[in-house]
Image (cartoon, rainbow, N blue to C red; front, side, top):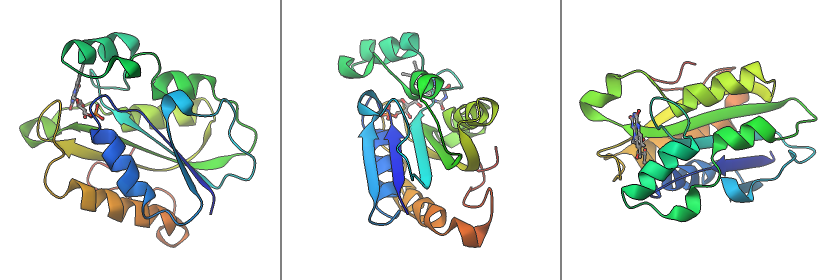
Length: 179
Ligand SMILES: Cc1cc2nc3c(=O)[nH]c(=O)nc-3n(C[C@H](O)[C@H](O)[C@H](O)COP(=O)(O)O)c2cc1C
């Protein structure tokens, strides 16, 4: 199974989730930060996984990324997020797509708004591919760390994506998995 994983991350929490998910997706996985993501999806791709932090209840924007930099994040990540990449990426074949995000857990977990769900809606409306799953992982606070157990949950989600023929469309989502 050939997989492309595209992520963005201001403080590294989403990157850690991306790597944990990719760890369980088999041998042929390319993991790229969004600024290095290809302008066109490679031919023969079986699965595209896209992830980013939730900012202002959705995918990041230049303005929210600048706000993260004002809070101490690396300015290298301001230029481009998954929203901009999904807007522009050229698609030829209809691939399976899974989306994920990181966002604040605890009592905030029940607030609406998720970059994974927003990215999933974009994938469906703009025909980027066939949305098969969406998932959220949680951080304790804005800059992290990831909440206890979240990397294990990310790995389990990766495994469910790798075996998605067995779990069926939309399978692999947790409590927040439905899009
Ligand atoms: C400008 C800004 C807006 C945010 N808005 C939300 C939000 O609406 N909901 C939420 O749960 N977390 C929100 N967060 C927290 C981020 O989701 C958190 O910083 C992110 O998961 C950390 O991942 P990263 O290290 O990969 O950037 C926001 C953070 C920033 C900087």
